[in-house]
Length: 304
Image (cartoon, rainbow, N blue to C red; front, side):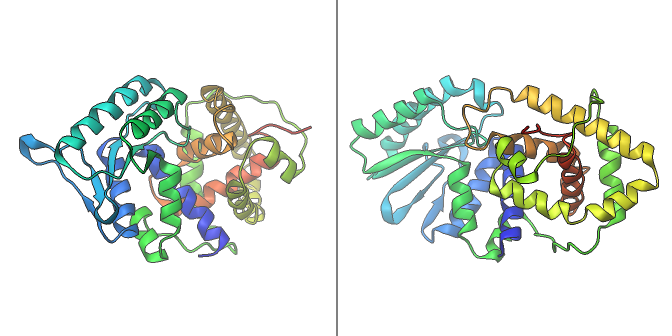
């Protein structure tokens, strides 16, 4: 798997993480663990006995996992603290020995609350465990990308052939139709074209996002030719994306202090909003459109 394919795989995985709550997240976690560890055993709830507070474990190391994926993580941290203690106390009633305990939390790449981290560290110390802590999407992503390509495909779906020689205009048209229909307020202000790399760093975008934008940028000639037949459409797209970016940035105004690459969260939210369907074939067209309006500073901030 080359750098471009790996960047796309990361993006597809993050889209899955943001869309997964409850059982869907647990299925995603379980599929990665089953491929990563030969002796990982998933535990399914049965009747009135449930799963005995064990969502899965690695037999050889006596490592246990409990999964939690609330819809809104930012308001759920008091529940997380309670659940850590409750689930571990329930676990040790039925399973032994316990060498390691991990609380699998879908914090959607936002990071773990400090009180929660202190709570689980104290539990590990009090119970004299050899290791433990939070297991987050970042850890799942690391395991996923260590797998063979066929197993990665089984987890995140088919990785389309990335051709940078042509653009599929029927797919592009669907993407544009989706963007045009989005109910967003618009901002008509235009800014001069910035330096590409400096803007990426300034906006807190990672190397992975840079690769994705670079892929999209290689098809800008085809996109510009397509839009040249309808100048009004190009202007409408610009206004929609500018308004959409402003709304997403406002919704995520407090993420800068919690993430290493806060721009990635906004970038992925933009992609999610622009997807006509939850299908990966639309991604390259979306990245091409985002690259166009990233270049002209209609989305993301100018570094100057």
